[in-house]
Image 1: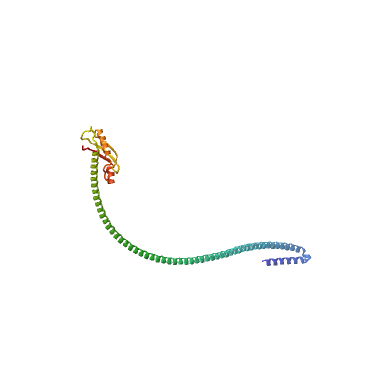
Image 2: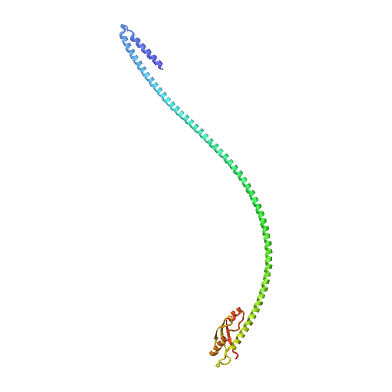
Length: 295
């Protein structure tokens, strides 16, 4: 298109130059002028047309250039976007690869850890089995030891029971013997006590009669006393029979008779008391004496 326009302009300029350079014939001046004006007008028209055409072509060319630039810009933008996307894709791929590598390392680490844990568990299991075996052997040994100890204890208990039975039998026999001895001793003691009681009673009677006799022998009857008077005297003695005190506790009604009775007891000192200290302390240390003179 551009070449065609240039050719047309070239032809136009060539024609115009030829017209200008030609020398018109004198006779044809008026016609030539007219023709030249028309030619110039046509040339101007053609030139304007060509110019407009050129402007249109330039405008079209500029539009095409703008469109081309716009398309180039779009292409550059698309290329830049594609490059960015490719870069992003590469980064994502790289990141994904790093992530995969990281996951792989993590899986390898987990696998290694699992392997270590499995080995540890196997070791623990082995130790547990060994420990269970040791405990089982220990339990069996302890059971055997307890069984032997129980048997020994049972034997010891049986021997102890037999010994206790023998001791119980011996104690029973000894107890029976002791009971028999105690019974015999008790009977003997009872007989002795009975004999002692009888002896003490007899001694008491004898001593009381002797005291009465001795006191009666020492009594001097008051002239004013009538016959048949009696009184009760409380006497305190020493173990030797010596009279410490004699006092009438039940009067005869005759004071002179009572005083004579007291004097008779004192004059009879020492009184004939039992030699047995226990009997003396019980019966004669302090005793009540009923004075009944016979004369």
